[in-house]
Length: 176
Image (cartoon, rainbow, N blue to C red):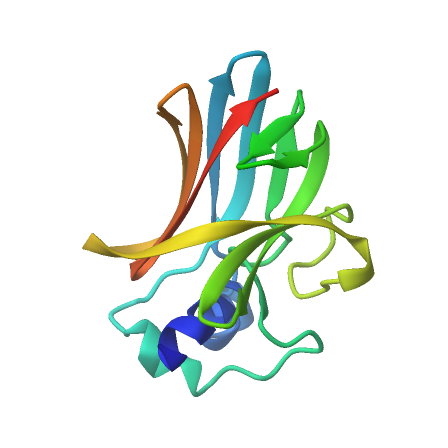
């Protein structure tokens, strides 16, 4: 579980430990979904394992200024946008644009929506955290070489799913 607690740190820093400056730019990924009246999108960096395991990379990662907070991607912060208010199991995320972070606490994960966005992905300012929602952790059936963040229809709403290696984190939401 200790390795799982630190896995998302690797999500944000994998590019920094993978090679020279020209190789540090991770590919970008984008996920989009319309749920009810809400147009939701996520833009994120996609660091790769390059044949390594997430666990093998953890020993190379420095401790950050906000322990147990990790960016979800690489390079510029991961940006989450919604055109309408969303409900994540009773927690409202107002329409707008946010940076996304994951926080591990007491063997559980939370997805953190921060009002600061567009900054470099390691610059987390916890005073700007708006809300956090619980994430469900499971072991993925297939390993993902690069960080993958997806949005998909789920029941009457949507689901955000984050995967790297065999770690999978997910949360359901609905348009308000």
